[in-house]
Length: 161
Image: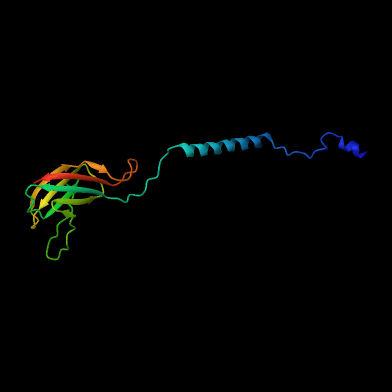
């Protein structure tokens, strides 16, 4: 055979092309489509959002009016009547200083972890005797965070003695 005849034979002039089976091409197309769907869904969906850890407190401001001269200590309890009054006054000669909430004149500030809808208030004199006691509803206002994840709130109530 002559060189010219070899060059003229069909299929011999070009190198052979890699041929994949049909099922391999189908798998590649399906995998590509799945990747595209996952990317689009994760990019454009508003799925669950991770909220930061709770690291805030809620402030309750209580403004006393009326005859407040004998009030030496103000206590609060969250929720039902069986809740513990906080802060507890010191008792006995060896008792440490009680945890006194910040006070500016007749305005007392309490830090609460959970903002209850209703709080109990109790005014005490120097001897720890109860001068007055009441239950008050609190309207809380969000001052940080978001509706979805929560955040610090503040409430302000007035109490006429």
